[in-house]
Length: 151
Image 1 (cartoon, rainbow, N blue to C red):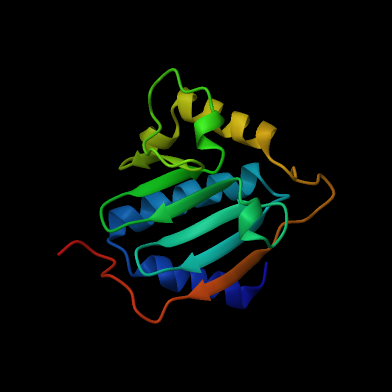
Image 2 (cartoon, helix red, strand yellow):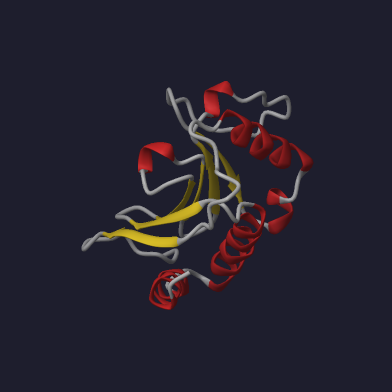
């Protein structure tokens, strides 16, 4: 992981309220440990800071994405409609993506979220390559952005 990319990501996260930053950092660290073969594609967009986990550098191949918002973080699943969700955690109605909104670390640590992650990884096309060492890549930074902290 490039020190410059890591430093930039930390600066992006620092703009959020301490509780959102801490939650997002904890989830991001867990996902990076769990998915060492994934590239982390960072987009500091207008609405949110997003970190997508992908087998390569293509946004179209993102499997999971963590997005920071002013009051919570969300875990997005890019095969969301195809996932079995007996707990009814997934929100959204798009044709591709669903998400789980998290306000506490315990929201991420639920067995139902773990099951969704496992399903998403099983459906990944292309899958993560076990011999690939993932990198942190800053893909884009929007010049204009919404406030990162609640008003």
